[in-house]
Length: 420
Image (cartoon, rainbow, N blue to C red; front, side, top):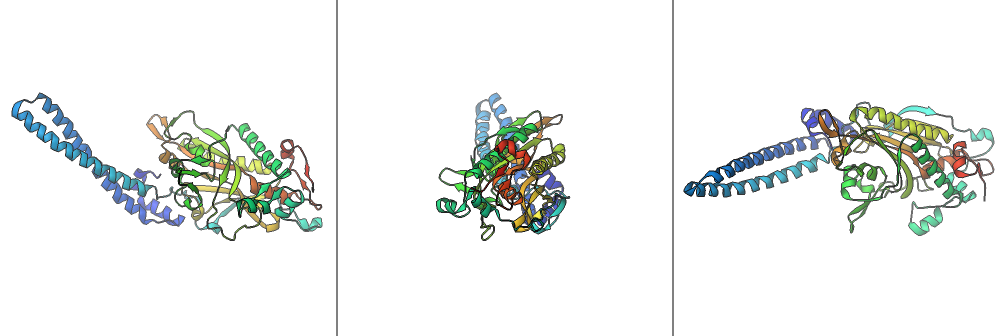
C-alpha cells in the first residue's frame, strides 16, 4: 500500500508513476477525494465521542430534572456517535479500496516503457558456437527424451497442457539444483524455509497479487484459499502484524509454485519453459527502508554468483516500468542464453518493493522516532524448469549427453548425463 501522506504531499508523482506503469492515473484524484471524506468522518466521530465523554462525567454529578435532561441528551448523543462511527467505517473502507488499486511509486531510475523497453545492464559469458563445434544443438525437449529426463506427453495426458514429468536424471537434477541453491543461501546467511503454498486472501492481497496479477492466480473458492505463484507470498506474510527486531532478516523459501499463465496462449507451448506448476527457491528480505537499495544489489549479486557457477552465458536487464508488478519499484532479471531459441530468456528476477507490502501486511520495526513499516525485497535463486532448460541446452554434447556444471556435481553425484 502506498504512503497516503506522501500521496497528499506529491500527488503528481503518483500520477506519473501510474502512467508509466500503464495503470489508471485518475485513481489518484479519486483517492484524494475519498481520503478527504474519510478524514472529515473521523474528525466528526472523534468530536462527538469527546462530547459524549464530557457529558457522561456531567451526568454523574447532576441531580433531579437536570440529570434527566442530561440523560436525554446523552441518549441522543449516543445515537449521533453511532451514526458517525458508521459513516467513518464506510469512508475508511472506500478510501482503503482505492488505495489498494494504486501501485508502488516507481523508482525514477527504472527504464520507461513496455516489456521490450528494458535496459541491458551487463552481459556475462559468451554463447557457445555450436556450428564451430560441428553440430546443430538440440532443444531441451529432444535432449530430455534422449536422457529420459523430461516427459511432456504423459504430463499433458495426466494434467493437461503445460504440464510435465521430470523422470530419472531429470528428477535428480531438480533435487540437486534445489539442494545446491539452499546450501548457497544458507552460506550467505539466509534462514531456509518450506512455507505453505495455500494462503488466505490477506496474504495474497498483502503482497500485491490480487490486483493486476490476479488473472494468473489459482483460487479455491470453496475454501477461500489461494495457491501461490511464488513463495514470496507466504514468506512476506510470515511476519504479518508483527514488529521486527535485528534487521535485516533473510529467508530462503523452497516451494512449488502455481500459475494459470492466462494471456499466454500460443507462447512457449513446447517443453517446460512456461508451465502451470514448478519448483523454486526464493530469497526474501525484511530490512530498514534506507537499506533497501543496497539490499537489492546484494540479492542480484547472489543470483549472479549462483548462475555464474552453472557456467551459462546470461545477461542482466533493468525491467521497464510497464512490465513491473504492482509492488515493485524496480526489478532486475537474469536472462540465460537458450541456444535453440537464439535468445536470452528470464531465469531469475529480483524486486525492491520498498514499504509497499509491509504497509498492507502491517509489518513494522522500531527506531528512535517510533514504529514504521519495514522494506521488503525478493529474489529468485533458482526457478527449476527454466534452469534445467538452460543447463541441458548449453551443456549438451554431440552425442546427446550433457556435461554437468562443476558446482553441481557434488549435489548430483555424476559429471555427465548420458543417453538412456
